Image 1 (cartoon, rainbow, N blue to C red):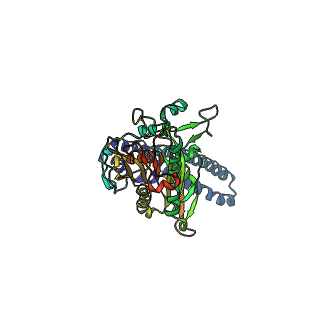
Image 2: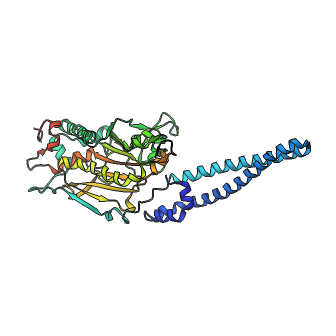
Image 3: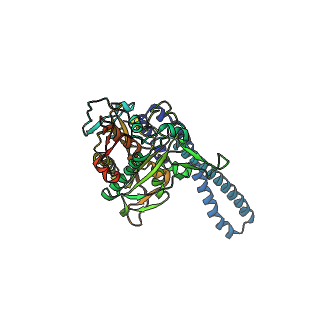
Length: 435
């Protein structure tokens, strides 16, 4: 969430920053500007009343010594009236501040000054291309064709069980999913210095508000409840481990010498994919349930840019170790996610589509999430706490890594070579068609 005071005092500047995202985002400030004006007027009025009340209260002592009962009674009535007006002003001020906060919950983060301008994801600049795109002397198949032929993927039975956008893995397919999760967690914890976290897969609404998923993106979530859909204690299935892991430190103050903090977490992820129907209908690209390893970092504000590069490099290292061809693109202003101030996407090559597709998004959020979740740090001992900065990225999306392996390492005879980094986990060098 943006800082209400900063928005009020630098409205034109913030509007210009949001306009880099889109005119519609900038227009969201209109309601905030009106409320902020009312707040300033009310603050001035209430402060004046408080001063008058304090002056009247100070005068009571002198009147008490004078013994003038009539004047004392008149001053009591004046003081009571002023106190009531101050209380009404403070109540109105609290309501206005709550209304401003509610408005700000629906306003996205401002882009960092280094983010390039652009109108769509087609404008995202390519920063680097890594690895050789595989060349085939046969027409490469899509991952669902390969998986079905190998007997390790069954989308029809998954649909029978749960409907569209679910998958069912068998044998080596299930083992490959598990191997990837283990490989990624081992790499991040043993070499990159992350602490492994196994979080709850259901969270309260407050946790989703903390990361920016609520209230704006409720349609993308799966909500659980008993009887009453408006139950305030209802839980949500997590769309990513970012939500519980970021909120581990919600409402806490962290000492500066503890930063940076780095967590890696495996979890299933659940998304309704609202508004995406008709896109990536076949295969594993866009599922209601999928597995992911998430990496999350907490740092001091001045370290944010460097921490983003570090986190992105950790996600890239997974692709490098697996030998998968990929590229890195930077989000332009219009393609930034709601909470992000700067982001990179890792896109893996899919031969069946002859295109690069996202497999990880690595983002720096500034203090946007920390303000919502009230995650602070103390710059120096006994110093005043400040909001820290949060970052996260997929390290990686396991299903998309699974399908990229099938597509990039497919062989003419229908088999699939297992990346060397996974062979110890898989116990084989090659996946072969079922007999």
